[in-house]
Length: 280
Image (tube, rainbow, N blue to C red; front, side, top):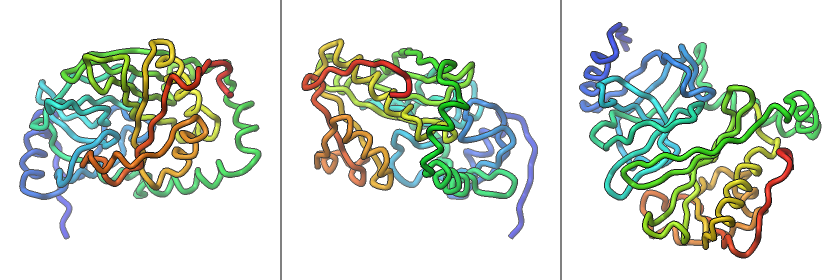
């Protein structure tokens, strides 16, 4: 097998990548930029394959921007009209909405120093974070007073999307997104997506804090219900949502893109959720 290495500009790369991926082949390239930290670092080798299945929220995709430059960001939301909203993991702002025609491929692997970090680092860190002393020591070392939460909003083709981001200094270490199921009825049902916490800051209740912020907001505006989808392999997330009053339903079978996911929902009006200390 021969690996062909080619250097080219951003616009030339977009055209080349589109041609290769449309032919059913995968591509590998060196990432540039910091917008996808911590998932992808500057200099990591990113492998992208052609789109063979439905794009869902949480996927990392390669797309061609309106300026014809390549962008690797995470999918946050898909609208019924076909629009896709994306954002870098360490970015506070959303990208301009894109269409399916702009999507070139899906990221399947991230390599750092010859190691597939999407698998190796996750396994090592999960073992360390499983130790009882980890959360106590981490809370002291990470200094929770330096952590703040900011809320922002953006309007895309599918309507409004709210975002809560946890920052430590200038670094985003966690975020969650929220959007109304029906734009015309913002006080009814909302969808929560994209809950993510930097792998170094997990098991510190930051995910719980973000969900509490969302529930507090929904309770404040008088919303009826909040829904979300979780991968069956993400057991810790399912346990977290259950502790916060979410219940599992089987309605996901009626939504093809999420038929293999666990579908949970919560009646917001049943409980009032007040936010307090960051480490609650």
